[in-house]
Length: 324
Image (cartoon, rainbow, N blue to C red; front, top):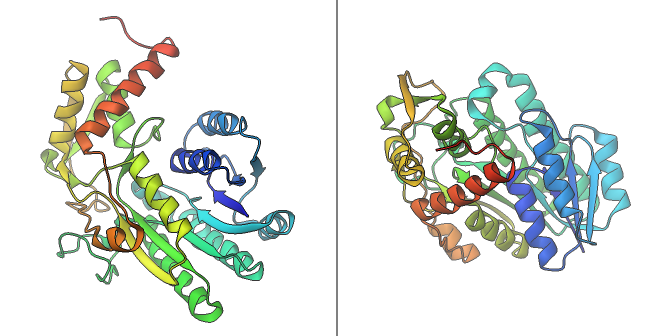
């Protein structure tokens, strides 16, 4: 009863794989270790997971049909957590073809292989970015989400629709989880929490969109993983479910929190907001609570404190903590 975690060497994927392994479940991680950010970070994540005897690493690309098919032929995969993707909303503006190829065509390859091998449950990592600049607050799954602001959310929304086709034609159990700004220890270096924490130590300048008034709904990694585990454990037919806390804070509040934790002052610069950025992300998690028993435990300020404690130790262990 193996679980496949695509993108399992990444931030969310490695935390999820670790949680599954700790539950005693065999896990196959499938990852191509791309260079969107330093592959050494993902290699280190995979190395930590390799300490578990029930862990298997397969290196490959979800766009490669032969490799995907061989993966399913070689392993008794019963459930799939599909987290592999080209990430980053703003970067997708520069490379739309790549994002559509990986996030849509790659998802198609996995869905096709999953239905051919009678996978029992398929959980797909989507994004709150699909909502765009909706006027419906908080974000609710009944919103049409048909006005994406960049190729990344467009590719994810398209993959959600494709997933419904596979449910309709083949009766597959597929849950699309819309993640909301996931953060925490060992987070991706390109995302705001790690960028700001590095900047407050190193003195680099952080660009601030919208005079710091943009709001984001942050979800701590442990809460996100608990939601994904619940989705893997519950075949639901076809569902789209928000996975977030429902307590957005402004960028300015976020920066103030990091300054308070560090006892240092950030260098910031006001810049125009890119057209890819909505003014707010705001999760209605009613459906997740009802269908998944989702109950996020970590407020953004507690989560940032935990993340800062990890970050401080990580920089000290690396010998890159600056002298005070």
